[in-house]
Each structure stands twice: as C-alpha cells, then as structure tokens.
Amino acid sequence: MMADAPAPIVPTAASLFPRLRGRRVIVGVPGVGFRGDLRADDPVVQASRTYVPVLSEHDYYRAETEQVEVFAPLVPIDRVWVEMVPETATSADPRLTLDAPPRRTPIPASELSQTTGRRVVQAVPDGQVRDLRGATDVYQNADGIACVRVCGEPEWYRWALGGVTPSMIEVRADLLWVE
Image (cartoon, rainbow, N blue to C red; front, side, top):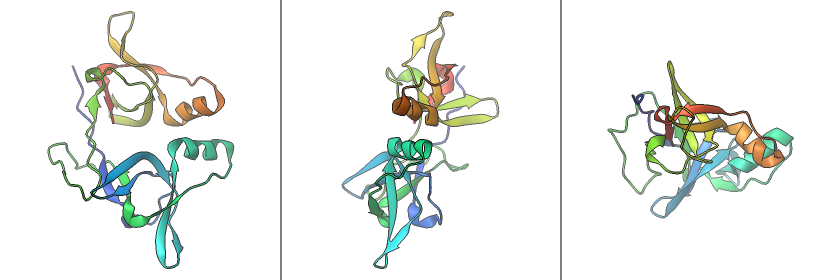
C-alpha cells in the first residue's frame, strides 16, 4: 500500500525572505530556463542592487564540512526562488508559467528506474523525511520487496568529498518519492 504523496515543491520569490543562508534555491531567467540543486547565502547589496550568493550543493556542503570559503556567484535577487513545501500546497493546483520555475511534484520511486543520487522523500508514520538522497536504484531485497538504500544529504556529499561511505537505510520503494 503506497503512502500519501508529499506536497510539491513550490518556488517562492527570494525577495520575500530576509534570511536565505542554507536554503535550497532555483535560479534562472523567466522565459529562458532554470537551474536547481543550489544553496543560497544571505543577500548582499552592491551599488543599490540586491544579489544572492549562490553555490552548488556540492560546494555548499564542502564549505560547511571543511569550514572553508568557496566562490559564490552573485545572482540578482529577482532571478532567485526559494524551494518551499507549503502545508497547503497540493499537486491539484499546479502553476504552469514561464514567469517562474515550475512546481515539482514528487514522483513515486517505484515508477522510476534510476534513483541513485536523486533527492528523495520518505514517508514515515508522522509525515515525511526530506533532505535524503537515493544511494541505489530500486532493487528487490531478499524478501522480494522493491527497495532503495538512502542516506542523508549531508552524508551523500561527505561521501563525494572524503570517500567515506555513509550509513544508509533500506526503505521500501512504495514509501519513497523522487523530488
């Protein structure tokens, strides 16, 4: 029995947030295209214009883990959206426009062939757990159940940075969604 799907990610204008440090963001140019899997730092003002320092998630976790400074390009704040998961958002009210990044509705992991490295959401009895990464594709465990091994996102990036295999858990595929 599949658990209820998590709410979609709703891109929200970064200008609505006084603090952005560590938030997951999307950048882009409306009508042209968008890029995700990024993290922001707090906005800065230069020559009366507001910019957001934006890092790849890999660089963000490297900076956090190794306590080093990394180069963060400055993106005009009107080209930055924060990924939000509002309590009231549902996949029934999609917003299709080229003026902002589209909502991202999670897809059941059991419907995908590739989950390795993807952001996943796990259904648990009292809600969902986000900020996880699939460490394997869907496979059949010893009991014949479709599963995916997952780890926390910080551990996923530490694995890439230091080669230390993260602790993982096996989760039934029907309890996972890919963002």
